Image (cartoon, rainbow, N blue to C red; front, side, top):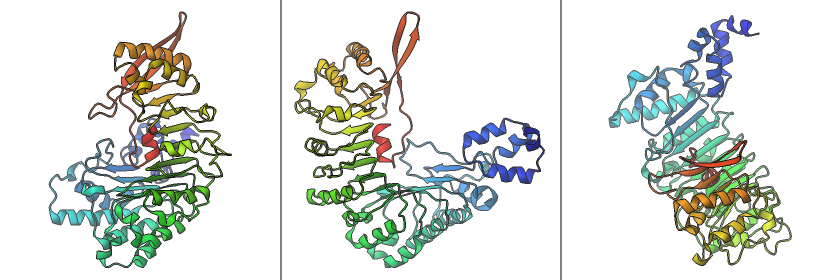
Length: 449
């Protein structure tokens, strides 16, 4: 079989390689022989994922000229320049001579049209992320270009994830573009994952447009929208399993409360991330399928008197934790694998023994996020080492803790707990590492990575 594969004509071999999505699989094929190596690299290996924070007019000019290469892109991420957590990924080998640093107005206009040209080539695109929030994006379009982009995206049946993070000009009332033009351009029935960020999405003036978007995307499994967008609270998405609601500008407790109706209509939710959530309560159906939850204390407290509660919670992010009140029905959380306690009330409850007793009720815990353990040992490194040894005895699967400097500027570190079995018994040691790269457009992933 391998020999037959190697003797195939280059045209047929190229067609086969076009069907390979994963970069690691392409590299594995490239190692088979020199002939395949030269066919895979860079023709395929550099043309699966495009992730940029800078403008790179030369890259887009190259892609616009090479439809044969651009059409194989699976993911496009156009991000903010300040988003340094994301590693840029773009073709280098064939585009190295067409880079530019300073972009004039004429060049920027040409770059935008090149981007639209490239989008027209795409046949297998699955992910499109465009982050232009807070006027710090690397791509801006006028209203007509935005509509053209949406029209092109609607023509790609393979598109399953879409992130639009910013205020689309075509939806602003001053743009003099009627919402029905936007609705005519939007037709993405195969979307599984949709994120809409920006003040425009929480505006009452586009409530009907937002409903149109959801009606055209009934197969959605994950939805991330502003908590202010209460116009969709009564809408039902039968396939929805993951929901994130975030504060875009401002809201009131009465508006937040309206989402309780949405929870009641979606009993099969598995992921729920809401901030703020002060007046949200566990619905009567109990959301029994929940696996990952990030909520304020009010929602967790509503578990106390609930007839039905989540039965298989694995990840919990809990704000304003208070030992004095304890955790309602701790047995509910016995199977937790990841726990994040961002803030802890009542400084008198920071003693290590209290924490150790608490962790004894979480035997399956693997990851703990939050400052609690460090506070209990007064940020002392020697005492922290002893605390980790005690924690491992109570939570044998524990593998990650926050470092003392976690989330401080330029000092983002975690403690990785490594267990090694030897003839003398179990040896436990710790390493300080950077956390894995996060997708900051995925709120739940950011909470637990």
